[in-house]
Image (cartoon, rainbow, N blue to C red; front, top):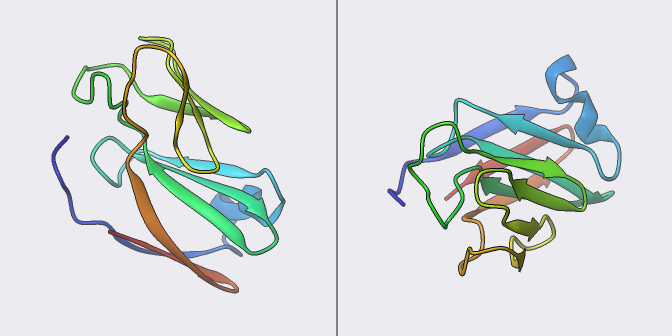
Length: 113
């Protein structure tokens, strides 16, 4: 999977990101990362961010990993991943989801690689 620069600052008070104000909330971004980014809130101060490209077939058109907390799912190959750490639960994928660094300083999230 190609490396792309990720350097985001997200304000959790903006309407688009309001789902992230609740534990188990998530947002799927299409315009960032290699194939988009899933941002997931585990607890009050723990967030994770993963690329939406499945490591089994990262460049396949029309196939994106989607959040279904506490898992992420790729409908094309059937792989499932934990949103806690990106590890593979089932499916043909052998590698975890590509994870980005997240720093939280209310009301902002900073996501980078």
